[in-house]
Image 1: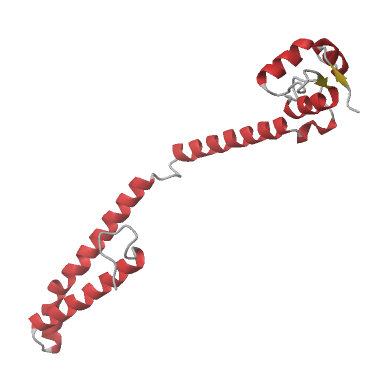
Image 2: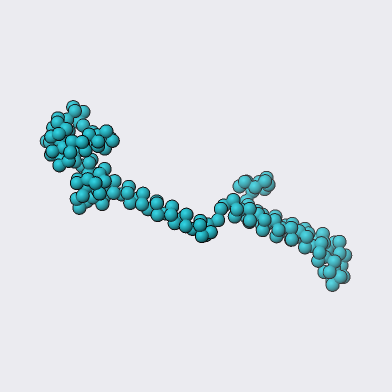
Amino acid sequence: MPELTASTREAARRLGVSDTAIHKAERAGRIAREPDGQWDIDKTRRRLTETADPARSPLASGAGADGTPFARLKVAQLALKVEAQRLSLDETKRRLVDVTEANAALDEIGSTMRDALLNWPARVSGLIAAEISVDPHLLQTILQSHINDLLTEAADRFDPAGLGGDRPPQP
């Protein structure tokens, strides 16, 4: 049978804490009375131990204090703080790149490469035509067609239709 008491002071005495600590924990929602208004000493001790700050509470200073939810929460908070500091340091040292800036740089590089490839047939078709004795205009048209096919294939690989590109899906 559970050990019950109606008195907050008696519960505090049995738990080895002050009645103020019991009142504060109850107001914070860490512990609660039974439906009949009494304190279940074992249940209250267990809840206080699980939610207590190991650095401040005599209940949480036992051997199992590291496994309490409060202790795990403190470790998680510390880990998040360390990670935030690491990210801040990486950003300060310019190890991180803003996604918008990176996308803009990639778009600039891609459009420069595309423009260079599109202008290449016009620049070299006359020289190639003279070397192999063919019509320069016909050679330029053939080269442009192949370059357009190459760029379309590359665009389909890097930005498949329907994933946010401005091209309609291919059948």
